[in-house]
Amino acid sequence: MNSTTNKRIALISVHGDPAIEIGKEEAGGQNVYVRQVGEALSRLGWQVDMFSRKVSVDQEDIVQHNSRCRTIRLTAGPVEFVPRDNGFKYLPEFVEQLLEFQKQNSIKYELIHTNYWLSSWVGLQLKQIQGSKQVHTYHSLGIVKYNTIENIPLVASQRLAVEKEVLETAERIVATSPQEKQHMRTLVSQQGNIDIIPCGTDIRHFGSVDRQAAREALGIDPQAKVVLYVGRFDPRKGIETLVRAVRESKFYGDKDLKLIIGGGSTPGNSDGRERDRIEGIVNELGMSEFTSLPGRLSPEVLPTYYAAADVCVVPSHYEPFGLVAVEAMASGTPVIASDVGGLQFTVVNENTGLLVPPQDVAAFSNAIDRIIGNTEWRAKLGQSGNRRVMSKFSWDGVATQLDALYSELLQPVREKEPVLVAS
Ligand code: UDP
Image 1 (tube, rainbow, N blue to C red):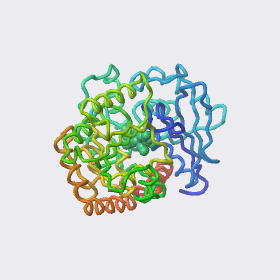
Image 2 (tube, rainbow, N blue to C red):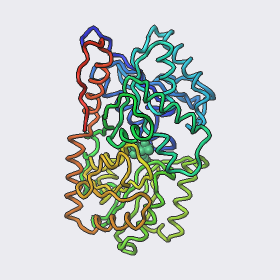
Image 3 (cartoon, helix red, strand yellow):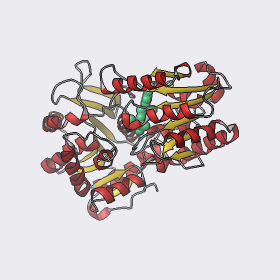
Image 4 (spheres, rainbow, N blue to C red):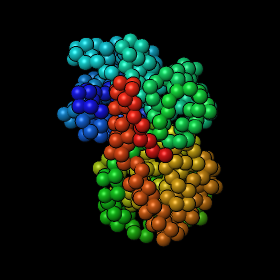
């Protein structure tokens, strides 16, 4: 990119606020992605404005992450939490507010990167109104998700239509794994431009604690066999499968076995209900003695939990990327994951962990036994995982690839250059 071009971008994430606490209802991978991408881009010289919907009167309208990167919260609809499936009706107001913000600040975003289908609709409007160029990351594809759940929400047909339109019309779609790209092509549309650029992880943060120190810090015995889950409480995350698998483990009854289920929740909300349901199953199966639910794990303690674990289990029914798997591998901990979506890309079977069929209790149980029963192999899997993340999934590497893509899109057409993509 030449120096006269303005490196300015709006990252739009209507329901995934990049400046809030992660690990609670509807705050997970997308929030992390937007914040990390935004901050890393700002280090590469971009002026980054991240737009989200304000959900509480206590929230500041603008959060400055650094001198070139900020979160801007727009008021669209009630200033309260709205589940994402009910958010569509507030989008026109979100667009109006964004246009108003531009006017008041004498800015026009030539380039926008939208996240999740709700924001993609906002992007489609900005494209129409002012010719903004659009990059889009799905984070979740409706057509794949609806195949894995029983209660299809009312908004489904709208979502599917918008997801097809954005694929066919955005300047570029960012798929975070080859599996996600394939889903787009086979299930959504043959038209449109897709690059593969993965999600990343903070490789300096994860892997900063060693196993012994981590166990000391958490008061976990060096002999313990620790199985860890980290993530939101959502039925699609498959926590029930993990709990039942641990109950079936040949180590059940061994005093060294420990199950930690980490993740935040709010009583009465959907994640609070799922947490209670999971705790109910733990109690019913007689596992409460060796199972703990420590609540939301803050960024400060997460590396310690990953490092203390013998294995991290990601039992999702469906996972577009799955940051937790990458964070665990970065921490040198093997991963057992469902053989679905982005997990097939990040976890290398028999090399950085094990991939097993989703919802298959016996298969998860067997995989857990294989790893926690073989200390040497466990350590080897952990080392391979760490190496894989270092070479492929750092945020700085991801931001460098996005930087090249954005720069290409802002160039006059004749100067088109090849884009660096991960395979
Ligand atoms: N997370 C966290 N604290 C918790 C639970 C989760 O910080 O108690 C973070 C986790 O480290 C990861 C993100 O939330 O960065 C979850 O992302 P993932 O892609 O695994 O799942 P999603 O939430 O997007 O479905």
